[in-house]
Length: 399
Image (cartoon, rainbow, N blue to C red):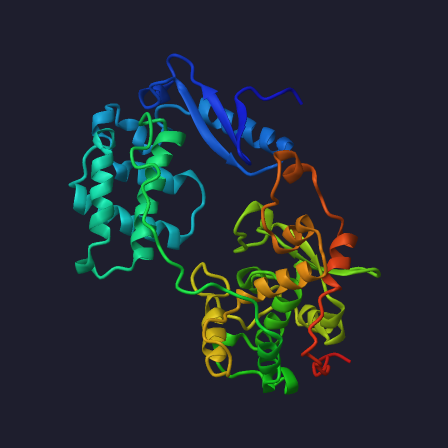
């Protein structure tokens, strides 16, 4: 494949720069005659393919196909809400993100009286920052920071992606926040308390529908033996479980309907720990397949676009009934697994590969360093919890 003209990289993200023909309709918006758009964190070959598609889409636009913002030929009449509309349409975004950004935009319009984006000043940004933190608004610093960040994101989008403004006037304006509590791993004693409850000793599944039936037993166990995020475990389907004579593994991806990942680094395969197999997880998988279910958790309800949202609520309520630290949550299992792997001298890149974190180091290290499933399996199998001595209580439904 010939080198794609205009493809370049900033950090780990690829971009495509397209020079517009002189009479192209998009020149009414892109005064520089160039369109620069993000492709994402991809491998070089993938970026070249997607870049070619993006290039063709941009050059193939007619005046009728131009996005709504392109009809505003005068930059003095382009407002942040125009940018917001284009931002929403630029790629799939969650309903929560769209609503959160929209709420921040309304506050921006209320405070600034909504000037054209070309007229925005840094002084306005500083004043808006102070207004968000006004005690009379009864808003936490974290909420104020989130709202300021959404506006800064739109301004950055207007600058980098749309080239509507020469620079983002509010860049590096920030609101300092303090972490209310720092997550830590569950201790061995706390694990023992959790897994000594009837759910895990008698398979006494809770009646609360938010718990998802069998999910109440298996999801916490998957949490402590994979380190996967709750949303990643909750969205699993039977097709995500691969069983071979040598190894069983779980696929985390965004390939299925309704599946999402936090970042591209989240796409991975995690070997299944032998303790999960001993407790009957693969038997549960086979039972789910035999029942002709697609989801691995057919009884787990979904809350809008948040896979695992209801389970998170249930687990939080359930945890509060136990004699453990009130700050512990499901996400602390990820800290637990990382600590276990680090204690066993697992290389950092292997830990990142298992937990779905972006690898540190040079661009070359991020792109070209891969861990074999066998290496990942060796690391996973070293996880041990001295406080847990669980009996196999799952009974296959089709003996």
